[in-house]
Amino acid sequence: MDTPGGVRLTVPFVNLAAQHEALHEELEEALQRVVRTQQFILGPEVEALEQECAAYLRLPHAVAVSSGTDALLMALMALGIGPGDEVIVPTWTFFATAGVVARLAARPVFADVEPLGFGLRAEEVERRLTPRTRAVILVHLYGQIAPDSERIAELCQQRGIALIEDAAQAFGAQYRDGRGIGHFGMCACISFYPTKNLGAWGDAGMVVTRYDELARQLRLLRNHGMEQRYLHKLVGGNFRMDALHAAVLRVKLRHLPQWNARRRAHAQHYAELFRCYGLAQAPGTAEFAPSDHVLLPAELYAGQTEVPHVYHQYVVRVQHRDALRRYLTDCGIGTEVYYPIPLHRQPAFEGLAYREGDFPVAERLAAEVLALPIYPELTPEQQEAVVSCIAAFFRTLR
Ligand SMILES: Cc1ncc(COP(=O)(O)O)c(C=O)c1O
Image (cartoon, rainbow, N blue to C red; front, top):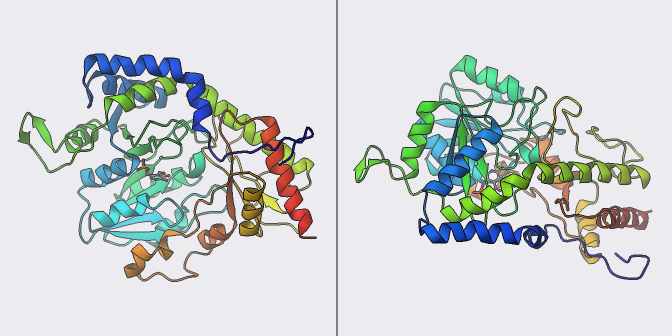
């Protein structure tokens, strides 16, 4: 995208270097602290991170683990999920949500999502319950608590089924009543993948929970079920977090509220720009009107709570998505598609015999969603470049 001065303004999809630039002194100091102790796995740094995250999320327990995927796997292991069991999961999510179910030889039972908040629908869950259903995994996608969370939690409670929250993308998000992740299900599973709002320098994750006994069980599972040295109470795994990751995460956690506030301001600015360019109506519409080119992400609990969305991703829906994406790439603007193929259409789940057309909302989203650059360091000029380039693309179609 050319600026008025003729300089090409590129907009990378993520920019971790910019974040590092601002933090490198604090990070160096934190890393040196670990180096001095030479305690590289679990230990005081990890315990401090657990306490700080638990306090941030207003939950009694946080168990730091090796990744978001392992957090989900451990939650299912703690429930004793295994062969013959069914676990209801949205078909519209990252692969790990269902992959962990299949890894335990249980069956992922897919369900469709609603098109505004991209969350699992309570009616869909209810329709798919069978006597073999042992758990439901609810995903808070893109940074917003799934709108049916409360209804699904009630349903699970009535039927005696465990509810797990996949909060990989939603650390710090709040529901309409102010409740955060981990306040609906038995636990919430978090990813600290480097590009997450709170990202480590490698793979890391966490399980947070209200339940004492579950937290105890997760701590055992994290370290090969070992209760005292070389006394193994159950079969777990190596799901431990490295202390270096904890040190990095502790530094970043201090900045998270202001980073999330900036992401929210950027989202608002995008919405204004899209309206000014005549590309979209206000956020909150799920169907294209004849004059719309873009559907904006809805902030479902706006005005009801302090942090209704943490905008891990800013995902719009567009027609001609793939052509637009190519156009933006040529303009030097990075985008992503989360996700091009819903899980029921993934080759890895072919054996489950789902067909095209089984989940119409997810299939439609797969053709329309486009994630635009959003990170605290994004500038208003870069946002303008993104939106004006999208406007230029739609002019080429006239
Ligand atoms: C919705 C969702 N679930 C699970 C995961 C898995 O987390 P990790 O990559 O830390 O294993 C991710 C990561 O991107 C995710 O977005």
